[in-house]
Amino acid sequence: MNGSALEVSVVIASRNRRELLADTVTSVGAGSVLPSEIIVMDQSDDHAPAPAWHVPPPVRVRHVRIPARGVSAGRNAGARVAQSPLLAFLDDDMSAGPQWLASLTRVLVSEGPAVAVTGRVTAGEPERTGAFVPATADRLRPITYAGRLPIDVLAGGNMGIYRNTFLRSGGFDERLGPGTTFPAAEDNDLGFRLLGAGFRIVFVPEAVLVHRAWRQPEDYMALRFAYGLGKGGFYIKHTHLTDLYMARRLARDLARRGVRTVRSARHPRQALGEMAYAAGVVTGACEWLVRRA
View (cartoon, rainbow, N blue to C red):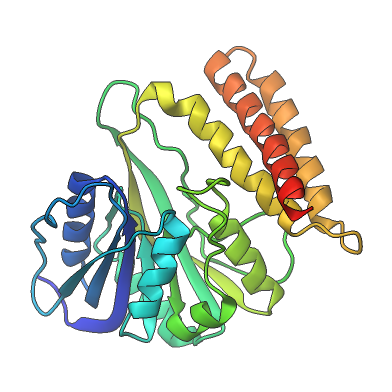
């Protein structure tokens, strides 16, 4: 049985995933705690009617069509129209666990506006032969992050934050993320900026989302390259002559990819995936440099 609704807006940016989206909304409505509203920012190419939303009252689903492309633009637009002081984000191919929203909001309420909260992303069972999940965050221990870090710790597809904090931070960089020229690392960028501004990021393992494994195996290499493109752009965005911290991170990342490629020699698909990612990082870094110049 669902609990009472919280003053939190759940934002889902979606494009051309009608059935997956409907299942995602249903999973949020089956949680132990309900949001006051679910905002679907729909960037689909067609103009088909909205799916049937299976959520209990008093949850309201707001289906908004927008012409802008990219998950970052969709999330930002959803945050702007949200009517609650708290925001929670998930992607349209994820299934929320029963305690997902309760876990995110519990930390937000207890810690206040100086934190962003993120949680576990686990891999779902393959929905077809060879289907895969592009990324997970399956740690089991809670941890609070602060300051400059050698890793990226915020999962934009599993995040809670105060609306005012999000808007004042500038939200997601709409040049980064799926649907853009640099189709990844929008969450890396937001996390880096929040930590640089003195905010903390709290990882809550109880806030679980299942990332559904629906992608075709033949899409693997292209997706690895795309992830690298975004990461390369992110590195160069934050690299300056007076601050080479990100340049050093880029170099370490490429070195790690080389080591992983060698270690994966007996697993050609994995080795090629590492090479594709590294090629994407270099390409994305060069492309960002050209655009900045």
